[in-house]
Amino acid sequence: MNGDFLQTALVFLLAAVACVPIAKRLGMGSVLGYLIAGMLIGPFVLGFVGEEGEDIMHIAEFGVVMMLFLIGLELNPREFWKMRKTILTLGFIQMGITTILAGAIAYFLFKFTHSTSLAVALAMAMSSTAIVLQTLKEKNISNTAAGQSSFSVLIFQDIAVIPILALLPLLATGNRPTAGEGHGSGVMIEQLPEWLQPIIIIAAVGVVFIAGRFVVVPFMRLMAKTRLREMFTAASLLLVIAVAYLMKEVGLSPALGTFIAGVVLANSEYKHELESALEPFKGLLLGLFFIGVGASLNFALVLQEPALIFSLVLGLMLLKALVLLFAGKIVKMKQDQNILFTFLLSQVGEFAFVLLTFSNQLAIIDQYWLDMLMATVALSMTITPVLLLLNEKFVSPYYGTRQKADEKPADEIAENNKVIIAGFGHFGSTVGRFLRASGVEATILDNDSDRVDMLRKMGFKVYYGDASRLQLLESAGIAGAKLLITAIDSPEVNIALIQQVQKHYPKVEIMARARNRMDAYELMEMGVEKIYRESLHTSVQLAIDALTNMGLRKYTANRKGIEFVKQDEASLHNLVQYRNDHKQYVINARAQIELQERLLAQEQVAGQEVDVAWDSELMRKVVGGDNQSKNKGDG
Image 1 (cartoon, rainbow, N blue to C red):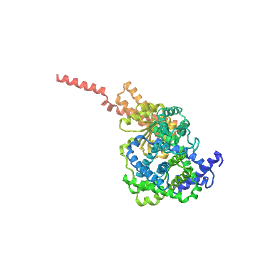
Image 2 (tube, rainbow, N blue to C red):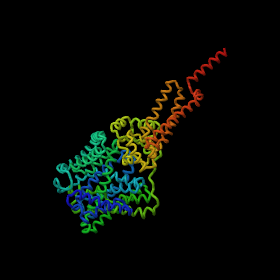
Image 3 (tube, rainbow, N blue to C red):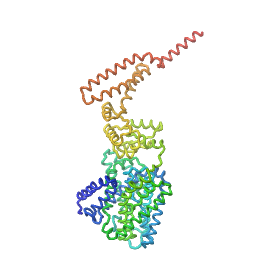
Image 4 (cartoon, one colour):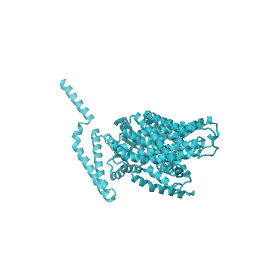
């Protein structure tokens, strides 16, 4: 295909739009739809894109880069620490046994050298983070035992890439490629002695870590101050691309660098906003990644060596399946969950592309076996959605319902998910401080970066972001929330937020802040029942104090204030039907005001005698007078 960008984009989008809905309708999932789309438009079927699939894999590589950044961003160190036993147990079993067995087969059966056998085995031990996480999300099985165990193994594998990439240069022997050979490798690391290369790798990782802590957060805070959503999105993309470029220049995987950057920023106040800004790109790029995998499948090589390639695919998937079944037994996973866990992770993943390509650049693997193994990886990824479909249709019903993961205690769920406060200015912070003092923790969102920074220093866990964005709400846990308190200064943003929640999460109860009656009318028309006008109670309290200063009994003034608020709320509900008819609104508003004043006047006359008993000053006088009379009588 020529270099026409519009033509390429048209082909990609047409293929995705044509294949993915059909795959979803047939119950195969979007991943298989993207893979089939890539196969159809690839150089070995219709030939619409890519020469030998290379053009597509460049796009696919950036899809992995974006995906790994977001995975790292979701890897909360606290959650990681809670899962450490599962991660280490399952990760060591899966990676360790698979590497040993695959390496032994490569050495004894295919007569590879020690270095080549180890490099190939480490690559084949990887599973597809992209396919598994997408499947967990689509099929809503993230909270099952199989889903959580799969995620634990994937975390271990993603972290294991760091020492593996550091190890590969030490395995390199023989002729080394000259600078510029390979696909996208940097030149700096190739010009250094082999013993120095691991040090450079560790130093590059350290630079990313330090920059993430001390450079990126102030930079994102500066971008947030512009209050332009597109600038924050541009800054987010710049961050990912800059880290990827840095890692490429020192000869490392860009995906590795962005994953580390994501982990570093996982606890920053910009975590949720970064997720919501990059979420649209993530979905698109993951689709392109799967299309790239499908298009990279070398059918010519498959037809030339069908027995060998299919034997490699089936042998590897069977080997990994046996290891995964054993790992599931070790952690006492139930049979249905163990089978699902096995099907989820039995393929070879996208990191294998990175490790195999890097190994080829280091002359550990020759070009013939690189092509063979790349085809094996792509085929195993293509087969996985089919296996999951077969499991869902035939295996799961036989073994019964899915086992739910251990439920969190109710109080822990309440602390994390039950209450969300959007907007933490003077109004919202008063609500939040009162709730926290009463033992109720809330997830707090605010889009003022300076305020977020100050509140975090004061001990509040506040996240920066535009709460009206659905992705941010979902990251903050709106799906599990019971109550959303909208306390944002801007009525427009408040309304946009409420519309999103009502549309996608109608069961979440909403308590909304309104500046005045007009804002309250609009919220009422949207169906919001619990509305709190920010000026009502404060102005009434001021009037109560004014009446007290003018000589009215304090209890009487407070009672009149409560009754006034009650009557005003009633008039609000009566007048909302006339808000768009100015003439009728004025007529009825005057009638309501007259009615309110008349009722309060009648209530004041009826309650004067009762109020005497509550007037402390008068009670002191009465009590004092009685005591004086008693003393005189006693005398």
